[in-house]
Image (cartoon, rainbow, N blue to C red; front, side, top):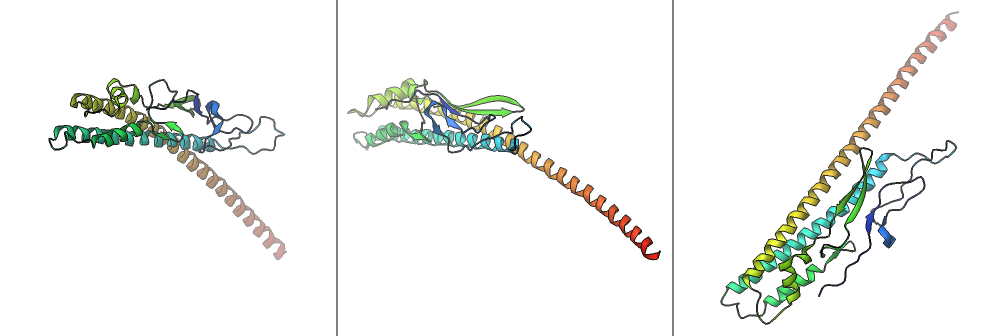
Length: 248
């Protein structure tokens, strides 16, 4: 029922080198849609390439982190839907009217289909052996890696038993379904924590970007102020000299 998952390393590269670097997804050589060429100045003073500000690198880091947040959000939404389907099956099992109905099979098929879902070409759920999606960061001058993990829902014992049992003749037991609910809720907590941590870093990076923009703006205003004072002094002296020459 479950398709074979990939085993290649996955990386979202955001660090830059002395030459143009394209962000790629690990060894698959697939370009990250959120990345752009990142270029830094050469140490050679003859080099004419303009210096790129660190804001460019920060914007790439923020963009990749936001892709990761979208990935975790999609995981959470699918887990919520799976929970709803599990509750529907439990209600059908408790109802005398629906206890002999086979409509629960539709919900089981939906759960199986959602457990195989992908987002941004990555599986949402796995067995715990899939490599995480790694986002390379530079925070406070230190290189770091933030990992977005593939949910290991399919390795949870009760959920794995439910999915691999397929759609038999009888509705799954209430005990098994409730255990599956606990496992999906645990996965939702893990997903929420990763998403919250990523959003925290995004907030820090965006604040740093705004502070740098304000600093650059104030420095520019200060330079303009100095130039304006110099120009006023120059005009005053020029006017004074001109008046002396005119009276002579």
